[in-house]
Amino acid sequence: MRSILNISCFCAAALTLASCTAGKRINRSAERILLGQEGIRNAHVGISLFDVDKEKYLYNHQADKYFVPASNTKLFSLYAALRFLGDSLPGIRYHETPDSIYLEAAGDPTLLHPDFKEQPVIDWLKKSGKELVIGDRNWNEKEFGYGWSWDDFNSAYMAERSPLPVYGNVIRWTQVMEKTETPDGKMADEAFVFSEPEVSWKVRFNPAKSNNFVVVRERNDNIFYVTEGKEILRTVEVPFVTNGVLSAVDLLRDTIGRSVLYVPAGVTLPVTNIRYSQRTDSMLSVMMHRSDNLFAEQVLLMVSQQLTGGMKTSLVIDTLLKTDLNGLPQAPRWVDGSGLSRYNQFTPQDFVWILQKMLNEFGAGRLNTILPGANQGTLASYYKGLEGAFYAKTGTLSGQVALSGYLTTRKGRRLIFSVLVNNHQTSAVVVRRGVESFLRDVYENY
Image 1 (cartoon, helix red, strand yellow):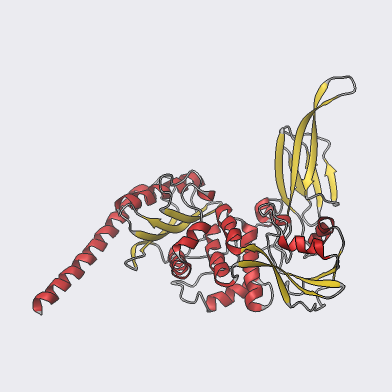
Image 2 (cartoon, rainbow, N blue to C red; image 1 turned 180 degrees about the vertical axis):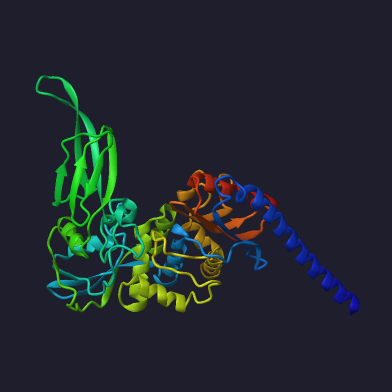
Protein backbone atom coordinates (compact mmCIF):
# COMPACT_ATOMS: atom_id res chain seq x y z
CA MET A 1 0.00 0.00 0.00
CA ARG A 2 2.85 2.34 0.89
CA SER A 3 4.54 1.86 -2.50
CA ILE A 4 1.31 2.57 -4.42
CA LEU A 5 0.73 5.73 -2.39
CA ASN A 6 4.28 6.87 -3.01
CA ILE A 7 3.91 6.30 -6.75
CA SER A 8 0.62 8.25 -6.77
CA CYS A 9 2.19 11.13 -4.90
CA PHE A 10 5.18 11.06 -7.22
CA CYS A 11 2.91 11.16 -10.31
CA ALA A 12 0.86 14.05 -8.89
CA ALA A 13 4.03 15.94 -8.08
CA ALA A 14 5.39 15.27 -11.57
CA LEU A 15 2.23 16.58 -13.20
CA THR A 16 2.30 19.69 -11.02
CA LEU A 17 5.96 20.24 -11.85
CA ALA A 18 5.27 19.80 -15.57
CA SER A 19 2.43 22.29 -15.39
CA CYS A 20 4.56 24.78 -13.49
CA THR A 21 7.41 24.29 -15.95
CA ALA A 22 5.07 24.90 -18.90
CA GLY A 23 3.68 28.00 -17.20
CA LYS A 24 7.16 29.39 -16.61
CA ARG A 25 8.16 28.67 -20.19
CA ILE A 26 5.05 30.43 -21.52
CA ASN A 27 5.67 33.35 -19.17
CA ARG A 28 9.19 33.76 -20.58
CA SER A 29 7.75 33.57 -24.09
CA ALA A 30 5.10 36.18 -23.29
CA GLU A 31 7.70 38.53 -21.81
CA ARG A 32 10.08 38.12 -24.72
CA ILE A 33 7.65 38.10 -27.64
CA LEU A 34 4.71 40.23 -26.54
CA LEU A 35 4.88 42.05 -23.21
CA GLY A 36 8.29 43.57 -23.81
CA GLN A 37 7.64 44.57 -27.41
CA GLU A 38 8.06 48.18 -28.45
CA GLY A 39 4.66 49.89 -28.50
CA ILE A 40 3.11 47.24 -26.23
CA ARG A 41 5.29 47.32 -23.12
CA ASN A 42 3.49 50.44 -21.83
CA ALA A 43 0.03 49.09 -22.65
CA HIS A 44 -2.26 47.13 -20.35
CA VAL A 45 -2.18 43.44 -21.31
CA GLY A 46 -4.19 40.50 -19.99
CA ILE A 47 -3.56 36.89 -21.03
CA SER A 48 -5.28 33.67 -20.06
CA LEU A 49 -4.49 30.18 -21.41
CA PHE A 50 -6.64 27.22 -20.40
CA ASP A 51 -5.96 23.52 -21.04
CA VAL A 52 -9.29 22.00 -22.09
CA ASP A 53 -8.42 18.35 -21.43
CA LYS A 54 -6.75 18.96 -18.06
CA GLU A 55 -9.47 21.50 -17.15
CA LYS A 56 -6.96 23.89 -15.63
CA TYR A 57 -5.31 27.21 -16.37
CA LEU A 58 -1.96 26.89 -18.06
CA TYR A 59 -0.98 30.54 -17.79
CA ASN A 60 -2.50 33.79 -16.50
CA HIS A 61 -1.15 37.31 -16.74
CA GLN A 62 -3.48 39.96 -15.29
CA ALA A 63 -6.24 37.59 -16.34
CA ASP A 64 -8.61 38.70 -13.57
CA LYS A 65 -8.25 42.39 -14.47
CA TYR A 66 -10.88 44.28 -16.48
CA PHE A 67 -10.33 45.37 -20.07
CA VAL A 68 -12.35 47.01 -22.85
CA PRO A 69 -12.86 43.97 -25.11
CA ALA A 70 -14.16 45.65 -28.30
CA SER A 71 -15.75 43.05 -30.59
CA ASN A 72 -14.83 40.16 -28.32
CA THR A 73 -18.13 41.17 -26.69
CA LYS A 74 -19.79 39.41 -29.62
CA LEU A 75 -18.80 36.07 -28.07
CA PHE A 76 -21.39 36.69 -25.36
CA SER A 77 -24.00 37.65 -27.95
CA LEU A 78 -23.08 34.49 -29.85
CA TYR A 79 -23.70 32.36 -26.76
CA ALA A 80 -27.10 34.00 -26.22
CA ALA A 81 -28.10 33.29 -29.83
CA LEU A 82 -26.93 29.67 -29.77
CA ARG A 83 -28.71 29.12 -26.48
CA PHE A 84 -32.08 30.70 -27.26
CA LEU A 85 -32.76 31.38 -30.95
CA GLY A 86 -33.19 27.82 -32.16
CA ASP A 87 -32.18 26.61 -35.60
CA SER A 88 -34.01 29.36 -37.56
CA LEU A 89 -34.43 33.09 -37.03
CA PRO A 90 -37.87 34.54 -36.30
CA GLY A 91 -38.35 36.84 -39.30
CA ILE A 92 -41.72 38.33 -38.40
CA ARG A 93 -44.55 37.69 -35.97
CA TYR A 94 -48.04 37.77 -37.40
CA HIS A 95 -51.76 37.02 -37.26
CA GLU A 96 -53.64 36.36 -40.48
CA THR A 97 -57.31 37.02 -41.19
CA PRO A 98 -59.26 36.55 -44.46
CA ASP A 99 -58.50 40.17 -45.44
CA SER A 100 -55.37 41.26 -43.56
CA ILE A 101 -52.07 40.19 -42.08
CA TYR A 102 -51.15 41.84 -38.80
CA LEU A 103 -47.37 42.00 -38.34
CA GLU A 104 -45.08 42.64 -35.40
CA ALA A 105 -41.39 43.37 -35.97
CA ALA A 106 -39.07 40.61 -34.74
CA GLY A 107 -35.67 42.31 -35.02
CA ASP A 108 -34.30 40.00 -37.73
CA PRO A 109 -31.28 41.72 -39.39
CA THR A 110 -31.30 39.48 -42.49
CA LEU A 111 -34.46 40.89 -44.10
CA LEU A 112 -33.52 42.11 -47.60
CA HIS A 113 -29.85 41.91 -46.63
CA PRO A 114 -27.67 41.37 -49.74
CA ASP A 115 -25.79 38.51 -48.03
CA PHE A 116 -28.99 36.44 -48.05
CA LYS A 117 -30.37 35.92 -51.53
CA GLU A 118 -33.34 33.85 -50.42
CA GLN A 119 -35.92 35.92 -48.56
CA PRO A 120 -38.77 33.66 -47.38
CA VAL A 121 -40.49 36.37 -45.30
CA ILE A 122 -40.43 38.93 -48.11
CA ASP A 123 -41.59 36.34 -50.67
CA TRP A 124 -44.49 35.41 -48.40
CA LEU A 125 -45.53 39.06 -48.01
CA LYS A 126 -45.35 39.62 -51.77
CA LYS A 127 -47.57 36.64 -52.51
CA SER A 128 -50.15 37.27 -49.80
CA GLY A 129 -52.10 40.00 -51.63
CA LYS A 130 -53.69 41.01 -48.32
CA GLU A 131 -53.67 44.31 -46.49
CA LEU A 132 -50.56 44.52 -44.33
CA VAL A 133 -50.62 46.17 -40.91
CA ILE A 134 -47.48 46.44 -38.77
CA GLY A 135 -46.74 47.57 -35.23
CA ASP A 136 -43.70 47.78 -32.97
CA ARG A 137 -45.26 47.62 -29.51
CA ASN A 138 -42.41 45.31 -28.45
CA TRP A 139 -39.68 47.86 -29.28
CA ASN A 140 -38.28 49.34 -26.06
CA GLU A 141 -34.83 50.41 -27.22
CA LYS A 142 -32.95 53.36 -28.71
CA GLU A 143 -31.23 53.38 -32.08
CA PHE A 144 -27.74 53.73 -30.59
CA GLY A 145 -26.15 51.74 -27.78
CA TYR A 146 -24.99 53.05 -24.42
CA GLY A 147 -21.54 54.61 -24.81
CA TRP A 148 -21.38 54.58 -28.61
CA SER A 149 -19.48 57.39 -30.34
CA TRP A 150 -22.22 59.67 -31.61
CA ASP A 151 -20.08 61.19 -34.40
CA ASP A 152 -19.69 57.78 -36.09
CA PHE A 153 -23.33 57.91 -37.20
CA ASN A 154 -22.33 58.18 -40.88
CA SER A 155 -20.10 55.07 -40.75
CA ALA A 156 -21.41 51.72 -42.00
CA TYR A 157 -20.15 49.90 -38.91
CA MET A 158 -22.58 51.89 -36.74
CA ALA A 159 -25.90 51.26 -38.46
CA GLU A 160 -28.84 51.99 -36.19
CA ARG A 161 -30.55 49.28 -34.21
CA SER A 162 -34.22 48.94 -35.03
CA PRO A 163 -37.24 46.66 -34.60
CA LEU A 164 -37.40 45.90 -38.35
CA PRO A 165 -33.98 46.13 -40.00
CA VAL A 166 -33.97 46.07 -43.80
CA TYR A 167 -30.98 46.12 -46.17
CA GLY A 168 -28.72 46.04 -43.10
CA ASN A 169 -30.07 49.52 -42.23
CA VAL A 170 -27.69 51.09 -44.74
CA ILE A 171 -28.00 52.58 -48.22
CA ARG A 172 -25.31 51.42 -50.66
CA TRP A 173 -24.29 54.31 -52.90
CA THR A 174 -22.29 53.52 -56.03
CA GLN A 175 -20.47 55.80 -58.44
CA VAL A 176 -19.61 54.50 -61.90
CA MET A 177 -17.41 56.59 -64.21
CA GLU A 178 -18.19 56.13 -67.89
CA LYS A 179 -16.95 57.66 -71.13
CA THR A 180 -19.60 59.81 -72.82
CA GLU A 181 -19.56 61.95 -75.92
CA THR A 182 -19.79 65.71 -75.44
CA PRO A 183 -21.80 67.98 -77.80
CA ASP A 184 -18.57 68.88 -79.65
CA GLY A 185 -17.87 65.19 -80.36
CA LYS A 186 -15.15 64.68 -77.77
CA MET A 187 -15.09 61.92 -75.15
CA ALA A 188 -15.21 62.84 -71.48
CA ASP A 189 -15.63 61.08 -68.15
CA GLU A 190 -19.09 61.33 -66.61
CA ALA A 191 -20.06 60.01 -63.19
CA PHE A 192 -23.30 58.11 -62.66
CA VAL A 193 -24.54 57.62 -59.11
CA PHE A 194 -27.20 55.18 -57.94
CA SER A 195 -28.33 53.66 -54.67
CA GLU A 196 -29.42 50.22 -53.48
CA PRO A 197 -32.18 50.28 -52.56
CA GLU A 198 -33.57 53.20 -54.52
CA VAL A 199 -34.83 55.89 -52.18
CA SER A 200 -37.33 58.70 -52.44
CA TRP A 201 -35.51 60.64 -49.73
CA LYS A 202 -33.73 63.92 -50.39
CA VAL A 203 -30.40 63.68 -52.23
CA ARG A 204 -28.28 66.78 -52.80
CA PHE A 205 -25.26 66.83 -55.09
CA ASN A 206 -22.21 68.88 -54.25
CA PRO A 207 -21.26 70.96 -57.31
CA ALA A 208 -17.59 70.67 -56.37
CA LYS A 209 -15.75 67.48 -57.29
CA SER A 210 -13.36 65.55 -55.03
CA ASN A 211 -10.70 62.88 -55.38
CA ASN A 212 -12.97 60.44 -53.54
CA PHE A 213 -16.64 59.61 -53.91
CA VAL A 214 -18.31 60.62 -50.63
CA VAL A 215 -21.85 60.43 -49.28
CA VAL A 216 -22.72 62.14 -46.01
CA ARG A 217 -26.08 61.99 -44.26
CA GLU A 218 -27.70 64.60 -42.05
CA ARG A 219 -27.34 63.68 -38.39
CA ASN A 220 -31.05 63.28 -37.68
CA ASP A 221 -32.68 63.09 -41.08
CA ASN A 222 -32.54 61.02 -44.26
CA ILE A 223 -31.00 63.77 -46.35
CA PHE A 224 -27.88 62.65 -48.23
CA TYR A 225 -25.13 64.86 -49.65
CA VAL A 226 -23.24 63.32 -52.56
CA THR A 227 -19.80 64.45 -53.73
CA GLU A 228 -18.53 62.89 -56.96
CA GLY A 229 -15.01 61.46 -56.95
CA LYS A 230 -12.47 60.45 -59.58
CA GLU A 231 -12.78 56.69 -59.02
CA ILE A 232 -13.97 54.55 -61.93
CA LEU A 233 -16.05 52.45 -59.54
CA ARG A 234 -16.67 52.97 -55.84
CA THR A 235 -19.40 51.94 -53.40
CA VAL A 236 -19.95 53.42 -49.96
CA GLU A 237 -22.46 52.35 -47.33
CA VAL A 238 -24.22 54.98 -45.26
CA PRO A 239 -26.67 54.17 -42.44
CA PHE A 240 -30.13 55.64 -42.71
CA VAL A 241 -32.26 57.05 -39.91
CA THR A 242 -34.59 54.18 -39.02
CA ASN A 243 -37.30 56.09 -37.10
CA GLY A 244 -38.41 52.86 -35.46
CA VAL A 245 -40.10 50.87 -38.23
CA LEU A 246 -41.11 53.90 -40.32
CA SER A 247 -38.11 53.98 -42.67
CA ALA A 248 -38.33 50.21 -43.15
CA VAL A 249 -42.04 50.49 -43.95
CA ASP A 250 -41.24 53.19 -46.50
CA LEU A 251 -38.64 50.97 -48.21
CA LEU A 252 -40.86 47.89 -48.05
CA ARG A 253 -43.63 49.56 -50.04
CA ASP A 254 -41.48 49.53 -53.16
CA THR A 255 -40.07 46.08 -52.49
CA ILE A 256 -43.34 44.20 -51.99
CA GLY A 257 -45.37 46.33 -54.36
CA ARG A 258 -47.99 47.75 -52.00
CA SER A 259 -48.38 49.85 -48.89
CA VAL A 260 -47.89 48.72 -45.32
CA LEU A 261 -50.04 50.41 -42.69
CA TYR A 262 -48.24 51.36 -39.48
CA VAL A 263 -50.12 51.45 -36.19
CA PRO A 264 -48.83 53.42 -33.18
CA ALA A 265 -46.89 51.72 -30.41
CA GLY A 266 -49.81 51.77 -27.99
CA VAL A 267 -51.94 49.52 -30.18
CA THR A 268 -51.77 45.81 -29.41
CA LEU A 269 -51.90 43.56 -32.47
CA PRO A 270 -53.13 39.96 -32.07
CA VAL A 271 -49.92 38.29 -33.30
CA THR A 272 -49.80 34.58 -32.50
CA ASN A 273 -47.59 33.03 -35.22
CA ILE A 274 -43.98 33.28 -36.39
CA ARG A 275 -42.70 33.27 -39.94
CA TYR A 276 -39.03 32.18 -39.93
CA SER A 277 -36.32 33.50 -42.22
CA GLN A 278 -32.70 32.23 -42.29
CA ARG A 279 -30.91 29.38 -40.59
CA THR A 280 -29.53 30.81 -37.36
CA ASP A 281 -26.00 29.50 -37.86
CA SER A 282 -25.76 30.99 -41.35
CA MET A 283 -26.37 34.44 -39.90
CA LEU A 284 -24.06 33.84 -36.94
CA SER A 285 -21.25 32.77 -39.26
CA VAL A 286 -21.50 36.05 -41.16
CA MET A 287 -21.72 37.94 -37.88
CA MET A 288 -18.50 36.44 -36.54
CA HIS A 289 -16.47 36.25 -39.76
CA ARG A 290 -17.18 39.89 -40.62
CA SER A 291 -17.61 41.08 -37.04
CA ASP A 292 -20.95 42.60 -38.05
CA ASN A 293 -22.10 45.05 -35.39
CA LEU A 294 -25.72 45.29 -36.49
CA PHE A 295 -26.13 41.51 -36.53
CA ALA A 296 -24.71 41.26 -33.01
CA GLU A 297 -26.97 44.01 -31.67
CA GLN A 298 -30.07 42.54 -33.29
CA VAL A 299 -29.19 39.04 -32.04
CA LEU A 300 -29.31 40.29 -28.48
CA LEU A 301 -32.60 42.08 -29.16
CA MET A 302 -34.12 38.92 -30.63
CA VAL A 303 -33.03 36.98 -27.56
CA SER A 304 -34.56 39.74 -25.44
CA GLN A 305 -37.86 39.23 -27.24
CA GLN A 306 -37.61 35.51 -26.54
CA LEU A 307 -36.82 35.86 -22.83
CA THR A 308 -38.60 39.05 -21.78
CA GLY A 309 -41.37 39.63 -24.33
CA GLY A 310 -39.82 42.82 -25.70
CA MET A 311 -36.63 44.20 -27.24
CA LYS A 312 -34.46 45.84 -24.58
CA THR A 313 -30.69 45.26 -24.44
CA SER A 314 -30.06 46.13 -20.79
CA LEU A 315 -32.95 43.91 -19.67
CA VAL A 316 -31.78 40.82 -21.54
CA ILE A 317 -28.18 41.33 -20.41
CA ASP A 318 -29.32 41.53 -16.79
CA THR A 319 -31.44 38.41 -17.28
CA LEU A 320 -28.56 36.44 -18.81
CA LEU A 321 -26.06 37.47 -16.14
CA LYS A 322 -28.44 36.33 -13.41
CA THR A 323 -29.20 32.99 -15.03
CA ASP A 324 -27.09 31.20 -17.66
CA LEU A 325 -24.02 33.38 -17.08
CA ASN A 326 -24.08 33.62 -13.31
CA GLY A 327 -20.89 31.55 -12.97
CA LEU A 328 -18.51 34.01 -14.63
CA PRO A 329 -15.15 34.30 -12.83
CA GLN A 330 -15.46 38.10 -12.60
CA ALA A 331 -18.77 39.93 -12.94
CA PRO A 332 -18.46 41.98 -16.16
CA ARG A 333 -19.86 45.33 -17.10
CA TRP A 334 -21.75 44.40 -20.26
CA VAL A 335 -23.75 47.09 -22.04
CA ASP A 336 -24.23 46.19 -25.74
CA GLY A 337 -24.21 43.30 -28.18
CA SER A 338 -21.45 44.38 -30.54
CA GLY A 339 -18.66 45.82 -28.40
CA LEU A 340 -18.87 49.30 -29.92
CA SER A 341 -19.16 50.75 -26.43
CA ARG A 342 -16.06 51.47 -24.36
CA TYR A 343 -18.22 50.99 -21.28
CA ASN A 344 -17.94 47.21 -21.70
CA GLN A 345 -15.49 45.67 -19.24
CA PHE A 346 -14.57 41.97 -19.20
CA THR A 347 -11.58 39.96 -18.01
CA PRO A 348 -9.57 37.43 -20.03
CA GLN A 349 -10.84 34.72 -17.67
CA ASP A 350 -14.42 35.73 -18.50
CA PHE A 351 -13.75 34.98 -22.17
CA VAL A 352 -12.07 31.67 -21.39
CA TRP A 353 -15.14 30.78 -19.32
CA ILE A 354 -17.70 31.61 -22.04
CA LEU A 355 -15.61 29.80 -24.69
CA GLN A 356 -15.42 26.71 -22.50
CA LYS A 357 -19.15 26.89 -21.84
CA MET A 358 -19.92 27.12 -25.56
CA LEU A 359 -17.56 24.23 -26.29
CA ASN A 360 -19.28 22.05 -23.70
CA GLU A 361 -22.83 22.97 -24.75
CA PHE A 362 -22.57 23.26 -28.54
CA GLY A 363 -19.46 21.32 -29.55
CA ALA A 364 -16.34 22.18 -31.52
CA GLY A 365 -17.84 21.11 -34.86
CA ARG A 366 -20.60 23.69 -34.73
CA LEU A 367 -18.40 26.46 -33.36
CA ASN A 368 -15.75 25.87 -36.03
CA THR A 369 -18.31 26.64 -38.74
CA ILE A 370 -19.29 29.91 -37.04
CA LEU A 371 -16.00 31.37 -35.84
CA PRO A 372 -13.39 32.54 -38.37
CA GLY A 373 -10.45 30.17 -38.62
CA ALA A 374 -6.83 30.86 -39.45
CA ASN A 375 -6.53 33.20 -42.45
CA GLN A 376 -10.33 33.64 -42.66
CA GLY A 377 -12.68 36.59 -42.18
CA THR A 378 -11.23 39.13 -39.76
CA LEU A 379 -8.24 36.78 -39.36
CA ALA A 380 -7.35 37.04 -43.06
CA SER A 381 -3.54 37.05 -43.53
CA TYR A 382 -3.06 35.96 -39.90
CA TYR A 383 -2.17 32.51 -38.52
CA LYS A 384 -1.41 31.06 -41.94
CA GLY A 385 -0.47 27.41 -41.65
CA LEU A 386 -2.69 26.89 -38.59
CA GLU A 387 -5.81 26.12 -40.64
CA GLY A 388 -7.97 23.64 -38.74
CA ALA A 389 -6.13 24.33 -35.48
CA PHE A 390 -7.08 27.95 -34.79
CA TYR A 391 -10.52 29.59 -34.40
CA ALA A 392 -10.99 32.96 -32.77
CA LYS A 393 -12.83 36.26 -32.49
CA THR A 394 -10.97 39.50 -33.05
CA GLY A 395 -11.73 42.87 -31.49
CA THR A 396 -10.50 46.34 -32.37
CA LEU A 397 -11.19 49.87 -31.19
CA SER A 398 -8.77 52.77 -31.22
CA GLY A 399 -6.07 51.80 -28.72
CA GLN A 400 -7.69 48.42 -27.98
CA VAL A 401 -6.99 44.99 -29.49
CA ALA A 402 -8.54 41.69 -28.39
CA LEU A 403 -8.38 38.07 -29.49
CA SER A 404 -10.07 35.09 -27.84
CA GLY A 405 -10.65 31.59 -29.13
CA TYR A 406 -9.50 27.99 -29.51
CA LEU A 407 -6.03 26.63 -30.35
CA THR A 408 -4.96 23.03 -30.89
CA THR A 409 -1.19 22.87 -30.55
CA ARG A 410 1.20 20.91 -32.73
CA LYS A 411 1.30 18.24 -30.01
CA GLY A 412 -2.50 17.95 -30.08
CA ARG A 413 -3.25 19.80 -26.85
CA ARG A 414 -6.52 21.76 -26.90
CA LEU A 415 -6.31 25.24 -25.46
CA ILE A 416 -8.70 28.13 -24.92
CA PHE A 417 -7.04 31.54 -24.90
CA SER A 418 -7.84 35.20 -24.43
CA VAL A 419 -5.43 38.08 -25.04
CA LEU A 420 -6.70 41.60 -24.32
CA VAL A 421 -4.54 44.68 -24.98
CA ASN A 422 -5.74 48.13 -23.92
CA ASN A 423 -4.29 51.63 -24.25
CA HIS A 424 -1.48 50.78 -26.66
CA GLN A 425 0.28 53.62 -28.45
CA THR A 426 1.24 51.78 -31.62
CA SER A 427 -0.69 50.53 -34.64
CA ALA A 428 -3.25 47.75 -34.24
CA VAL A 429 -1.29 45.70 -36.79
CA VAL A 430 1.81 45.76 -34.60
CA VAL A 431 -0.23 44.49 -31.63
CA ARG A 432 -1.99 41.81 -33.69
CA ARG A 433 1.33 40.54 -35.06
CA GLY A 434 2.78 40.49 -31.57
CA VAL A 435 -0.15 38.43 -30.30
CA GLU A 436 0.19 36.15 -33.32
CA SER A 437 3.89 35.54 -32.64
CA PHE A 438 3.15 34.69 -29.02
CA LEU A 439 0.35 32.25 -29.87
CA ARG A 440 2.44 30.64 -32.60
CA ASP A 441 5.13 30.02 -30.00
CA VAL A 442 2.53 28.37 -27.75
CA TYR A 443 1.37 26.29 -30.73
CA GLU A 444 4.90 25.07 -31.45
CA ASN A 445 6.09 24.38 -27.90
CA TYR A 446 3.18 23.23 -25.77
